[in-house]
Length: 138
Image 1 (tube, one colour):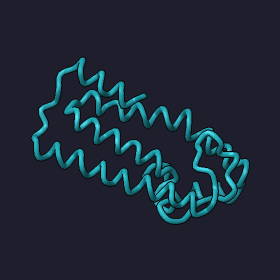
Image 2 (tube, rainbow, N blue to C red):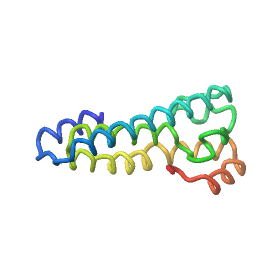
Image 3 (cartoon, rainbow, N blue to C red):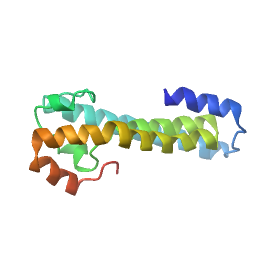
Image 4 (tube, rainbow, N blue to C red):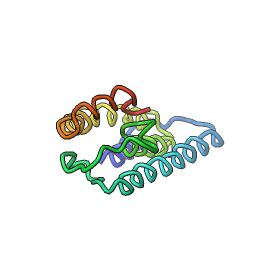
């Protein structure tokens, strides 16, 4: 998992001397935002009575485009990114933080694009219109 790789990178590379008060804020703010965003995404899926499982996007019963989904098409992935950023700051390691970019590239290519293809097959023009209005991340 990328979190473990970030830890390993932090152990194998020089640490970044972040100011302690900056480091605390850089851990707490993204961590809190991740919690709120992630829970809002799950709650919206539950409210719509549709699957939260990212491995079965074709099992979606409704297109969720309200709540947090008006701001981002992928709140749970955004929450994970913010959690990884908080972890990178906790580790005080720039190289670990750089792995957040790897996470975004990987998720876009291997998770989000296939999910969006499946959602477009299920919801057609409705999903295409939604994609045109709401950004993938933020």
